[in-house]
Amino acid sequence: MSDKDYHFTLNKIALQTVVELFENYGGTKPISVHRLPASASERTYFRLKSEAYSILGAWNPNIKENEAFFSFTTQFLDKGLPVPQIYSISDNRKAYLLEDLGDLTLFRHLQEVKKTESWNEQLTNLYFQAIDYLIQFQMAGKDFDFSKAYPRFCFDEQSILWDLQYFKYYFLKLAGVLFDEQALEDDFRKFAAFLTRASSHYFMYRDFQSRNIMIQGNNLYFIDYQGGREGPLQYDLASLLFDAKADIPASIRETLLQYYLQQLPHFTSVDKDEFLYYWPGFVFARIFQALGTYGLRGFFQQKNHFLLSIPFALNNLSSLLENYGFPYQMPELERVLSEITRNETLKSFGKQTQRLQVEIVSFSYRNGIPNDISGNGGGFVFDCRTLPNPGIYPQYSKLTGNHSETIHFFEQFPEVNQFIYHCEALVKQSIRSYLDKGYTHLLVCMGCTGGQHRSVYCANALAQKISASPDYDVIITHRELSSNKSIFIDD
Image (cartoon, rainbow, N blue to C red):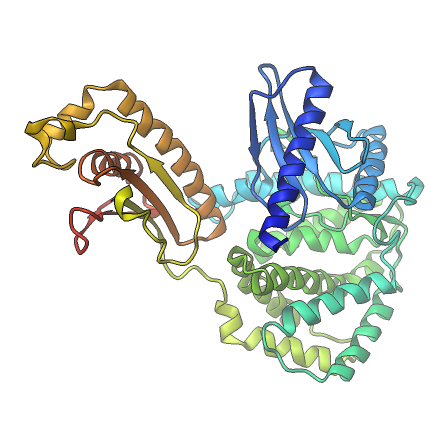
């Protein structure tokens, strides 16, 4: 079985399992099932809807990771923390149903705000609220059952070394950064030993960042904590404040750090000077782990939108080195950090070099579906052959979908408008996702029998619907009318 066939089979099993779980839970079949976009994890999520409610179905063949999530969720809910309810779990423990908290993450909200301003007071208040909850999560670790934690029950030297190896093999090596293997290994061990001296008797969320914070009304909810374990305070705050693409301004980051330090004594006794002594080290550690993820998903798995985060992470490293230095007497690690922060290729890696182009192509099925010359694959192919065909009438035989007579013909039929309406909804959904991920090309193909009337009209109509935006360009190509002539739709 090929890798493609394996993943197809796995996705089919995942879908069948969560649908059956939904039916058993609610006693009814879902009226719609939508697979959610993939993230950095290997878990698969579906949104399942009935007439009365919406539920998320999750599939993850890693049972130990699931058991950690189930255990942590139960304990958090018992403590009144805002995490999703678990409604049902499959017998094999690989699938489960979750409360649907919507699609608005703190990261997405932040990106929307940044379209019109760099930062505002409302964002700062949301981060204050997130920090208040972070402290509550961390304090939960004082009487927490970590027996189901996976893959480690605490953030010990082994955990830290795993993250450092992850950084070395998936970022440094794949990025072509040269280093002395033994010297770097020696520095890694010194670094891990240094971090383990910090107080570590709290719940460490592990991935406390803006994409894992949901906004629902005026409330925040928290997801993706299955990697949690017993650990230090500093790491999760570093995850939040140095979240690469969130790109929090330095002054705001300092304000948030001070707010955390002001609130923390209300919950536990902590030595502020000791906290700050270890603080830069944990920020470095978090950025190393994040760069490992960007390398694995971006360089190795060719998911290019992960590369967009690399310049932000390197900027954070530069700021750390400038403000704190690297005073741990680890010369090879310090040299490597200096090299990657000065590397112009890495600093520009994954940056979007052009606006998103939505290419709409009309074509004839007789000549085959158009190729995606961008190499991205995907996109849409809409079959216009079910629509009324003016080509069967002699008066339209010499005309195309560009002519006013043909346009008037199509405008008489409600089903044509309905067809365009549904195409528009699907394409706009993908455009939003492509812009968020930094993709630069989306192919939309409109096909009919001859590529003369229906496909041409629909391509033009769709372009008019989606072209009024400053965020992307729309290009129309009528392949069968003129293989060399394209029309640019000016926003």
